[in-house]
Image (cartoon, rainbow, N blue to C red; front, side, top):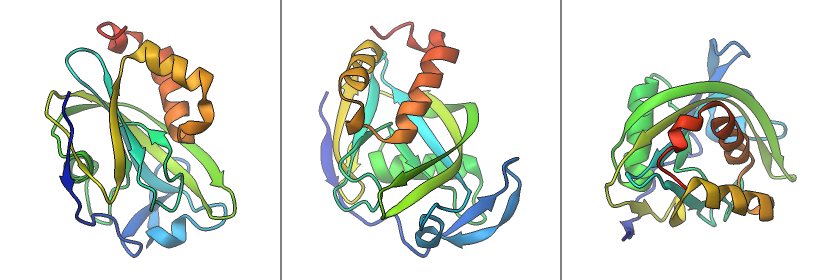
Length: 191
């Protein structure tokens, strides 16, 4: 499938206000994106999107080299944060459009909390909402966020994660393992 790489506008800012939450996902305040990722990170609300095509292949992205955390790592279709005052429904569609240039009907699967450090640079400490959807739109990758896009059948992704786990973002590996375990029907079309 063709992938256009024509979109290059900046869509993520260090000073954008993210939503701080407690472990029950109750909003407790706001903080800049740059501050929530320092040190061990502050717990904040996030989302991860898994978009498949009609052939059952997952769209995965390689994070841009300029990303502060996990640059150049392969990750799920799209992941980001709702901004202060933004509903999750608005945030997931906004970011999918801004980052990958596609639209998909998305269905909520689950929430989970994780923390992962990226050396001395910083950390993710997120309460993440995970969604799944389907789209045959041609991706228009935003090069300020994404340096590559691939389509992988679930079994091929399983093999790559098993053979070379260090090339994938930590949240992607955690989410994919849970999707494979708890939602096997999602993979019915993918080999």
